[in-house]
Amino acid sequence: MTVTGYIMNFMRLRLLSALIPLLLLLALPLVSVRGVPGGGDLPIRNYLSYAAEGPPPFPVVERAARATRDRESTSAMIAFLTGHVTRFPMDQNNGYYLSIVGDLYRDQGGNDLARQYYRRALLRYPDVHVRGVPTHQISINRLLTVVEDPRERIEYLHYLQDHYRESIDRGLVAYYLARAYENAGRWSEAFESYRVFLAHPGTRIPGEPNARNETQRRVAFYDSNRQWTHRDLESLVSAITSALWAQNPAALLRYRAGENFFTMSWQQDEMDPNSDIPTFDIGAFLRRSRVRFSSDLELNSNANEAYLRTWGWSHRIPTWYLYFRRIDFPADPDVHGNWEWGGILFGEAF
Image (cartoon, rainbow, N blue to C red; front, top):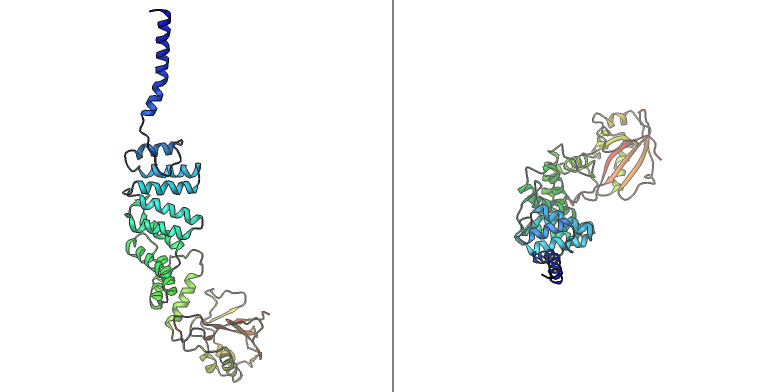
């Protein structure tokens, strides 16, 4: 072989060796998935590799979705997940992926869109466990953060009670169910659910530290006859001042609220369990006193609360303010908006 021929063969071999990797790369199956912006990141390359055979495993999809968001945007992550659901409609994890899409829309303030995706996850896909939590339970918990319609909330809360009784806080669900029943005007069911909540003393309502005390008061009022209320404040104050002037304890006590009446100082909280003194005998003090009262209500009285200053009580604190409140109780239209004498505040305050 001549030198020229040798050189030509050598060049051909060099060219072939350079082309082999390129040919092998071109021979690899090309897989495209709607919503995947390229395949540069390892999680996305793994996803593309698995997707060539069928729905990728959950961890692979999750990592690829996060990589898409980190490299591109939240919108790209939404496109990735919805694209996956479209391409693999039989993937049993699709409900969870759609709930993630709902979360992304909710975090952007798109509650209506979030609701649509949560409902798709709940109604169209099986209830599978992701990290030990059922996907339908995830969707319902998310729906309860974006849905305000009481009828729809009642539906979801009953679903939790019926399907996940052993894994939920029954007292918490009962409380939210009672609130939904109230907003729907279904009063007897509301107070039945409130009783269930009260039967679970360990339940705490997030953001409502006084929920238990307030519920106990509401249930007690619901169970009472409510006959002590007055249509208008003027007639109630007139009746009480007449009883004070006549030193008539029996007449005075007829106007005392039968439930949730408090006796406390101005520094106490009405929700304080010590704010009511069961042995406090107003009649005994009235008989020993010559009580006087202002001709007008205090200036800080308003459309829902009123205060009447009285003094001359035979007590270490001679000045008492009688407290009146308008009743907010739409469960009983005959009482809702009436007035009651709700308590006594000891000492000067104004």
